[in-house]
Image 1 (tube, helix red, strand yellow):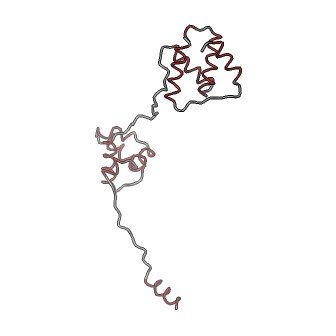
Image 2 (cartoon, helix red, strand yellow):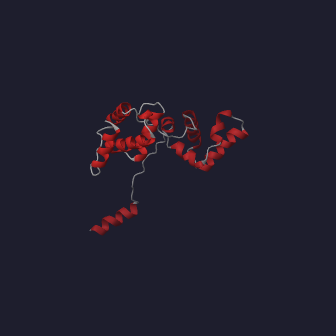
Image 3 (spheres, rainbow, N blue to C red):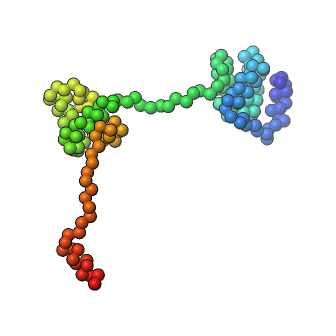
Length: 179
């Protein structure tokens, strides 16, 4: 299409809107359209016209169409950016969780602040280097580490279930009251 044909199309199709089926087809169409229209050599007004045309044909917002055209001008192929999960780096390792499980096993899983004090004592009072990272552990981090898979694989505490027993004097009373 020529720029005049694009102008006529945009003016005649105000109420019409197009949308692409999937992103791969959309980006491929944008690449081909920009190459065919020789977008790099267009004047400023011609580029604005093409931007409106791309936005109309793809259903993208003006800002998104502008980003795609900028990508094309930088010499990149117009394509979606790959998804990158944003996550925090793990500060404590599996070995730290296992070491905490060992400490909890030895001390019968006492409270978080008491466990923290034990870890700090092991590092600073007894100069045990393996407790270096755990000595800086906050109580909240400690409780979070106790929920980790590595902790539970190393140490799982089983308790015998206590049954619901009725004292003998209440059992006799409940039988007598039913009669």
